[in-house]
Length: 312
Image (tube, rainbow, N blue to C red):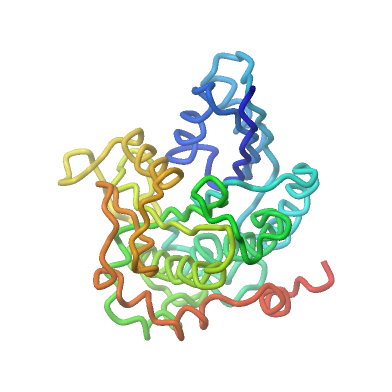
């Protein structure tokens, strides 16, 4: 009997790590997938996948690419609406939140769409946190708010692509000021701080979904110069650096987060390193502060009120 297709919804899959993750899954045929990808430039992304497979059919898979601009929460809401329509009642098995920028210059400009926050925070955390809210009904199977079946295969999964840079945040009290639009904070600092806030979000969702059939995993792909992630921060990365990994190696690290089911007993240990170990709680200790998590991770209605989305 043919395997049932699993559904993957992903951000940040038009190039770099996310592209390599999806390309790997498309390359195998034992498990069919339905992919719904959000991209700023739909045509260019379609061309990239066609080129990668030389125009060949993607059977047994299905690939849908929809417009998504993560600096615009109205675009996020529209993408979620289109995605839910495309799913036609199917569950999302994997929500891959991979998109990220290091736009240091963005802290010197007004926030996108009138947001009080810098572009990097909107893209790296706020918009993808909001997207998780909007897609939550499809992540939870019917009647699975409190799941009786908790086997690995029965659980959907949110995979948050994080970074070891979160360890550079030593004083979370500075986040409020540093991440405001117009703060002028350097890109290297802003990247670490937005990834820290993103990890707060992963913990927030882990707490919210603790009794649901949906797991949350944060994963670091490692130091990957080949993605160009350092451009916006002014940081020059090269393969000569200690611990540098290729894009394909980074993609393999992310793929492990799709399948690992050896979750530690400590529910706070959701961070999977690029070398395949679950970080101890002490290593990510500052992100375990529940008050901080609640401060930076609003409910859907609060986000829509704060960002002027109620009437959209």
